[in-house]
Amino acid sequence: MKHVNRTPDQRPLDQEPEFNRFVDAAMSRRRFLKATGAAGTAGFFAATPIGQAVANTMPTRSQLMGFEAIPISTTDTVEVPEGYQADVLISWGDAIKKGAPAFSQSNNAQAQELQFGDNNDGMTFFLISNDRAVLVVNNEYTNNEYLYKHQGDNISADDAKKAQAAHGVSVVELEKIDGKWQVNLDGRLNRRITAYTEMEMTGVAAGHELLKTTADKSGKKILGTFNNCANGQTPWGTYLTCEENFNGYFANTSGSELGESYKRYGLGNKDRGYDWYKYDTRFDMAKEPNEPHRHGWVVEVDPMNPNATPKKRSALGRFKHENAALTINSDGYVVVYLGDDERGEHLYKFISKNKYVAGADSNRDLLEEGTLYVAKFSGTEGELTGTGEWLELTWGKNGLTPENGFPDAASVMIFAREAATQVGATTMDRPEWVAVHPDNQSVFCTLTNNKYRGVKDSQPLNAVNPRETNPYGHIVRWNPTNGDHTAGTFNWGIFVLAGNPEVHESGLMAGSDNINKDNMFNSPDGIGFDLSGRLWIQTDGKYSNKGDFAGMGNNQMLCSDPQTGEIRRFLTGPIACEITGLTFSPDYKAMFVGVQHPGEDLAPSNFPEGGTSIPRSSVMMITRSDGGVIGA
Ligand code: FEO
Ligand code: CA
Ligand code: CA
Ligand code: CA
Image (cartoon, rainbow, N blue to C red; front, side):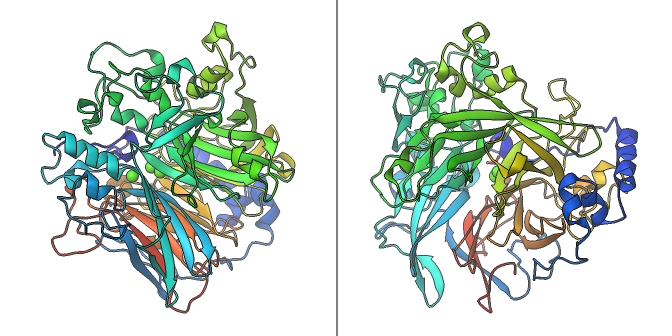
């Protein structure tokens, strides 16, 4: 294998989970679960405070989901239920501007700047008029084995620039023709934002000494966004793109040991095989020690103005951002839930200083100022429910003082991870996407997996991350106290513990009671709600279909009824892909789903074109042949 440049998130899960030293304890906990309620799914949900309200009225089969579940797949196709169809909307390298070259593996950076970026991830559909829309899509990273004919040997300056051009965000106009959305190459909003597009840093960290570089003495003018994982959107029409594994692009050619504040973000002397540092001094920390501080933020993009400068929002903290789940609280404050996807990192919440006012110009600056919090979960191990509180990350409070290494307010945001540790936040099993239920009363977060929980001292078991090794992941749900997202406290319960009841007959590794042999999956990652409250769950897991993962097949998307807990498989992806990215047209009759890195690591995929073509990440459009609402 040659220079496969994956970040931790994109590395295959461990071949086999480490030896489970606590099987007996886990089994007794499973028995506890069984004992806390009636048999079946109702029992599991009745055992949680959240479930108690619905258990009595729970139907035997969800009325919310109107499709028949599909089986697992190991084929190189996208499968959907009967009555549905999946079409490729756009793939990496497809033109998004008139006159742009067609896809070829030999395309250079100039071509790539006019084409759809690689490894599509989070995305949002913005309707402009009945038959016109814009789809904004993150392009998380690149795979050397497909980006270059030489598969990553001797990356040249031109090669590095091409990779930079394939990162970032693609803004693509769609038009509806004969009832189907398709790409409009003439769209005036079509735009590529890349790893070298000019951006503006805003908020408390803007202009700080730690953000100044040779090329930018202001500490405010930053080039580029990269490793754009998932996303968010605002009611004032902007798109939020989240910078995740930014560390993988930096090298330190001096070879000297980096300080703790670098190590905490995974920065090391070597990059992950992109080689950008050889040609772009920004990526060599020996030359530009502050450049990494300029990445790891949430960036706000205005898709309706192709000339608008994207704004990095320092008030939302610097970490490995997964997505940004924004909701307007009943009193008008903007609340954004934010996961930091790394083993043993944390879950955050931002509350705006000012209120949202429908239609007001002032909304544009709402993410510039506010307060960041981090979650602390409490509970009794084995109960899978509990309470929690939000700990404030404000300079001068909770020990965030100069004596503890926080000289000013900006340092708390730039080193948010260290601030979270200082205040005593709960270490989590890799918080990925957060989604707010459309009733605005509950919030869900995927904890994708963690091989170190309970094994490494830094990651002790806790009530909300209850498995010693967690190869399968879980989803936690919490209700803010009194339905108030600005409240300092919440109640939580585990919505699903993914598991494999075929391999593990009992115990926590078999999964919660809403997991069975027909719907099992591992590593929940992307989640999102439709307007009717169906919870869609996408996976970024192990697709070996062997061992602990036997019977799980390729990565997939499932649909769930949050009231009953029932989970049904809706879509399966091609070989060696991740399913990530989810958005709908506002009538919910078209659903857009991302197929990311089919055939990664040279696995035998030719998706989507087949034949001997190289595999390409693609956005799929899912519709119903009867024109109905997806999932209903
Ligand atoms: Fe890019 Fe944590 O997924
Ligand atoms: Ca991925
Ligand atoms: Ca993800
Ligand atoms: Ca993931």
